[in-house]
Length: 549
Ligand code: PLP
Image 1 (spheres, rainbow, N blue to C red):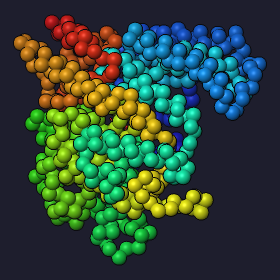
Image 2 (image 1 turned 90 degrees about the vertical axis):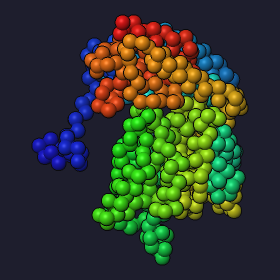
Image 3 (image 1 turned 135 degrees about the vertical axis):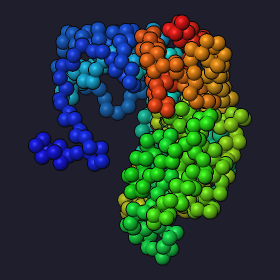
Image 4 (image 1 turned 120 degrees about the vertical axis):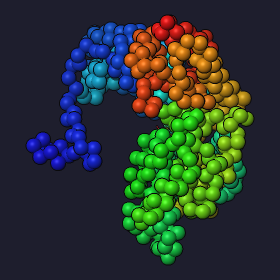
C-alpha cells in the first residue's frame, strides 16, 4: 500500500496505479488509438466540429428543461414504427458516411464524455434531439470497425440481420433464466449451437443432440476460458480425491495445479488461470512457420513441474493466436488427455471460423478427437456481431458439476433433456440474453454458403497481398511469419521504416496497428471487414509501395 497516497499497489507489477482524475475539459487532441498516434481528419474533425453544434442545439432547444410529452412506458407499436424508421434512417446515413471518414478517432479520453450532462435528464428529451446526439456525438465517437480500411485487431463484422435481431431481442425483452422463462430462447440456443458446430466440423460428441456434450453462448472468450479453468480445477480435485463431498471440491488447495499455454496465447487465458487460482506455465512456441507449441516442449515443462511437486491439470492450445494468427497442432497433442489426464481446451476465438472451409476441416476434426472443450467467437470473423462467444464441451456434466445452483424461487426445471439443458447450470449468469436469435437470423439470412464465402473472401484478399509481398523484387518488405488466414504480418527492413509506414497508412485513413514480432516492429493487417473489397487491398498495396519507393 502506498500509504502517503492511499493507493494499493498492483501485486507483482511494482507500479502504482495512476489516480484517475475527474474529467476535465480536454486539450485539443492528437489521436492515440490502438498504439497509433495520428490525426485522422475525416470523422475525427467532424466529431470535433459537431460536439459544439450539439451543445448549441441543446441550448437552443432547451433539452434539459424540455416540455416533451411524457412518452408511454408501454411499448406502443405505432410509436415504435415511427421512431424506428427515423432511427434506421440515422443508421443508414451513418453507414453510408463511414467510407468518407478515417478509422481512428481524433479525440482524447474525456472529450466525448464532456458533452454529456453530469446528471441524468429529469424530463424526457424529444426523440429528434436524441437522434441528433446520436449522429453528432455517438456515431462520430465510435471507432469505425465496419470501415473498409479497418484492418486492426481482428475484424468484428456486423451485418443487417445482426443489427435488426438486436431490436427483435429487445422487443421480446425476455430474461432467459431457465427453459420456462423463455422456452424458445433455450431451445433456439440448443439448435444454433449445434448448427455452428456442424458448420465448423466440430464433431457430434459436442452437439446437444448427443445428450452428453453441447454448447452455450458466453459473453466473451475470456469468460468462457475462466469457466473452463474453474471446471478443470474442480474436476482434478475430484479425480485425485474421489471421496470428496461435492461442496469440498471447491475448497481444496489448488496451489500445485498448473495449466500449460503457449507464450503466444491470448492474455485472457493467463487471466483465467489466475482467477481460477491456477498456476499458468507459458511454454515458448517455436517460430518455424508461425509459432507453434511443440508437444516435446510441453512434456519437458510438465516433467520439470512434476519433479518440483506440481500437478499438470490443463493444456490450452491456440488456433489463431492474436498477434500472428499462429496455430498449435491440435492433433499432435492427442495422447496428452489420456496419458496425463489433462483437460485440453482450444481457444479458436478468431480462426475457428476457418473450419467452415474444407481446407481447414482436418483441424476441426482434430478438435473433435482430442479436446475436452473449445471456444470460438461469432463476433469476430463470422458476421454475428458482438457478443457471441461460443463454447462447446464434450461432457456437459463437467459444467453442471461446478455451476449447478438453484433456489425455491426458481421454477422446477423438471426432467433435464436435450432441449431443456437448464443453461443457468452451465456457467455463472442466471439471466441470459436471447443471443441465439441473432445467430439464427444471421444463418437464415446468409445461409452457410454466404457465411463461408465471406470467410473465404478475407483469405483470398490476404493471399493476394501475401503474394505481392513475396514477389516484390527489391526486398522492400518481409513477412516475419507465415500466416494463412485473413491476417498478413509485414515489416520493412528497419523498425524505423516499419513505424514510418504505420504512420503513413494511418494518415491515409487506414486502421492498421503496429505490433512486435520477435522484438521487431511489424504491422498486423487483419482483413475481414465486410466493406473491404479487393480494390481496397490493391490500393493498400499501392500505398505501401509508394511509401517505400
Ligand atoms: N483469444 C484470442 C485468440 C483472441 O484473439 C481474443 C481477442 O482478440 C481473445 C481470446 C479474447 O476475446 P474476448 O474479447 O472475447 O474475451
